[in-house]
Length: 179
Ligand SMILES: [Zn+2]
Image (cartoon, helix red, strand yellow):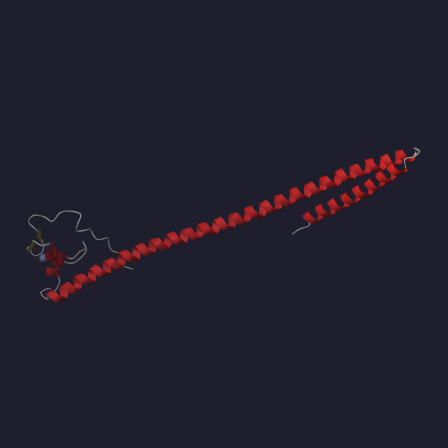
């Protein structure tokens, strides 16, 4: 691939008062368009006087036009390559962001699941303790007269608490066994 330096813009300095003189042939060009045809638009262009057969003006014009078009394409290609490199970097950055977000999401799901399982386990333990207290109360009441209703209530309560404990334990174990 042949690279060439970027063209120096003809607009970066004002046209010299006495025009441009070629150091190959000594000819002076007062107008920029004529000078440009002789020297070419780019620093690495061959001066027309150095090109064999350069008295054929139509061919010199075609040569200069082709050089200019080649330079435009070269600049467009350079710009496109830079843009491509930027897009590659952006794609890599987005892929990294996506994989980081996926990892964060998985971590958050696992933490939320662990928190829910702990709540269910604590609830099961509280129900178990309440059931033990209700059973003890039922036992104490059995020794007393006229306590049949309270005994039945305490026993029902113990049964309900037992069921609640089992349900909470099952929920905790279901949460923990999720994939
Ligand atoms: Zn010349």
